[in-house]
Structures are given as C-alpha cells and as structure tokens.
Length: 162
Image: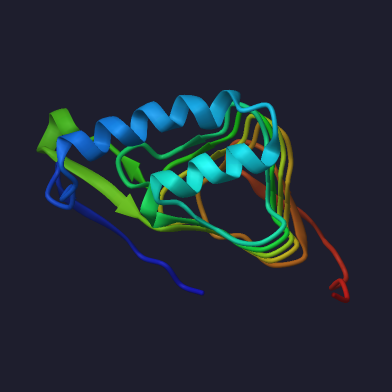
C-alpha cells in the first residue's frame, strides 16, 4: 500500500465546521480516560477514525485532532498507552504557511509499543511490531520489528497463519 503525504497551505483541507472540531476534541478526552477498551475504541470511532475488529487501544492514545478521519487502524491491531498518531504536521507553518498531511494506516495484527509516535503518511505493515518510544517516519514492512528514533528495521519475522 502506497500512501502519499502532501504539502498544502495551512488549513486548506480543513473542511470541518468549528462546532464539529470542538465536539471531536471533547470526545478525545473521553477516549483517553475511558476505563474499558471498547469505550476508548467507540469514542475514537465517533471522532472519525476508521477502526477494524478486535482492535485494542490503550489509555492516553492521541489520534490526530485535525484529521482523525485520515487514520485507519485495521483488524487485530494493538496501540498501547501514550502513543501519538498524526495525520498532519504543522512544523513549517511559520516558515512558508504550509502543513504536511497524509493518511496513516496501521496494518492488521500490528503492535505499537508505548510512547510511540507515528508521523503523517506512514503505513505500518501487517503483523509489524514497533518498539516502545519509537518515532515512525517511513512505511514499515509486514512481519517485522522496528525500534528507535527514527524507527529502523531490526528483524524480519516469519509470516503468521491467521
């Protein structure tokens, strides 16, 4: 799967009314603190995130506040506590008034370790493991382990039978 990220004028893709954005941000707090994983999943779906079956989302997972609909977490994936998943990057805002925007896909059966940051335009391969504290800046291969800042491949795994 090849997902493109693009550089755009700040806010040019932001077609959501301010009231809907405020609602999404309020729901975000409920998603962070919900005591049951099913509730956390429900609140993130309510914000617009595409979430598959048997997905686990830990406490304090921050899913992009501007474009949550650009993030997909596929079946059987696990995103552990304190992870950040971004579909936009405003770091160039004050230099040239642009932002980077890109869809993020977390593949089937992937495991995202605590405190991981996933940047815009990244595809996490199926059954891929991302180690704690990693920063994922590029696509990852299926059936592999990545760790570090930036995340680097350390091991390929044999494909799992489903």
